[in-house]
Image (cartoon, rainbow, N blue to C red; front, side, top):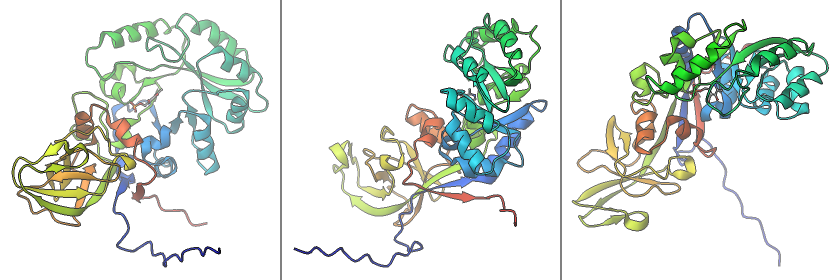
Length: 379
Ligand SMILES: Cc1ncc(COP(=O)(O)O)c(C=O)c1O
């Protein structure tokens, strides 16, 4: 039996049938947020933290949008740094977890990456590097107990690194566990621990977004803003908009079906939402398959025509249902899940998470549309 392959209708990407779900990434807002971070620490350099695909916003478009304003970039791993270098990003790139093996350490030297050194193995790999010397940041465990050398180990390590001709510049780096909590005793203790290293006169980098905003005395020579670049708040009690940060990602979809339901009707999987009154229901083309969190509870707001409406029923893979009773909401309306006019921090609060996770979880199915791209220079 001969099976014929089905004929594929002519494809038109501009067709109005395209699924409207998209993440609009405002690169102008990204640059403005970077400038705001910089203005909080005017005597420090600032490396924009663009790890994890720039917190879901797109590694390269974000790096390219920041190249003429940023002092450098920070990524988690060498693979992310390679992607930057392969695409012509020549600014300093700091690898926050350092090398995973000897080969990565060599790559770091070849690509002129700045490397965190948080364990003895990495010192040995550095010693064996051939060719160019590497700029290193000693990760000090001042109390977070994730990565780093103890404050007692640091002086000996500095002496050792100073004796290595494969290392050309040594700095100190640490990370605060509770910088987002005001008056934290943990932070006070971390600062005290770091003071024991004052006699070692080395440049320091201690501050993520929360610490940039709350610990000006710790800014040091280099700050490492991450979430604030994307408009998310690093602080527990405040939303990004209250900190004058601009949303970079606006997650949008559209109303694809409308229903008028009588009181007493169940909606969606498990009928977890049952109408209490005659209800106008909007079905929106976004779900956990796009990264909209399944755990978003009923009542989580979405924005349509500038007004907030509550989620009703469970989040499905490709759809959500919204109670739009007594509104003029209609088929085809644009729906904002978070972004301009609706802080991701507000949605994160409903979902018992943080905006970091919401941004990172937006799946590849969601088209990223970039606004305010830097003009491509003419060759
Ligand atoms: C070592 C380090 N520095 C800076 C940052 C940026 O943190 P934030 O996004 O909270 O500004 C991170 C992010 O996790 C980090 O791991």
